[in-house]
Image 1 (cartoon, rainbow, N blue to C red):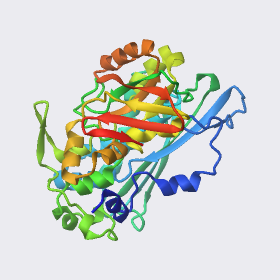
Image 2: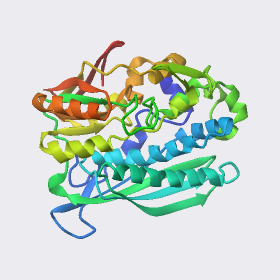
Image 3: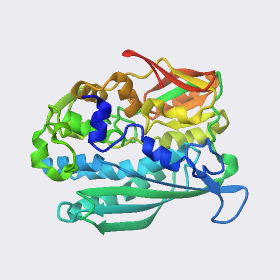
Length: 390
């Protein structure tokens, strides 16, 4: 069975073609090539300023968190879910240069019969903890409340999302203008950054439907029927070999596979705050490799070929997913970040200091490729498992 067919049966899409088709005629804002939509300063009407609003959720990662919590009683995975939903907003906005004075509102819908008040409390308090942590790095986040609703008729377990708003000077924006001759600095999504509490597998919040069904054992279908759509054919529901509490050894420590897949989405805000304060003029592009994985940059170039020929090592988590799923390597790189989730496009002269800055936060980084002139838009990956063009 092809992976594309499996995705369709599971009701998801690796490329979100239908979504992109639905929005293709919508206004793209003041700067169509920006990583996030930017609109005029509706808030105050100042032509020197602009507004940004961004919304995202933790996606189906909440279903896996529900299973792991039910299996182990470990509430801490819900703190990671709050981080997933927050960072999928904040790091996207950071890619247009917004790293301060961001207003956040949460939207949580739960099935009260399955999701306890302790879970809701953990989710809400986690947002406060993240706010305080980011303040220590000079990033001010303002929590404005939100909506928590009991909607068991339409939500099987829980849905966790945030909406973010900011106002900033247009002169401070990063608008992607990736140039021939640029090099690409890639920052690892895995490891343990100086501001993280534990090893991070690098998952982020993309590809979770594939990962959880392809990695974990079919027994969970009967044990946790609320964790998946009952309209999904049984042949593609939990078809892997692993148990949530099976352990994997990484860097001398044993980690539950369930918790490894649930690694919270790493934020690059502490790094980006320093980078933008000191080297904004050297940044030609910032790409958050979320939906679309390593092919993401293709949406933000024109008449360019991006060649990634010296990628960071594939971390154990993505090796495991590929082995369990049998997904082709080309598709793996398109669905998952595969080891780095932030790319800085810059000059060769500026790159070394950007790499050093990442390492000061204990984040592995290096020059992973370069950009050249081309007809049309192309992304090429030269990997240990083949050369792939997108």
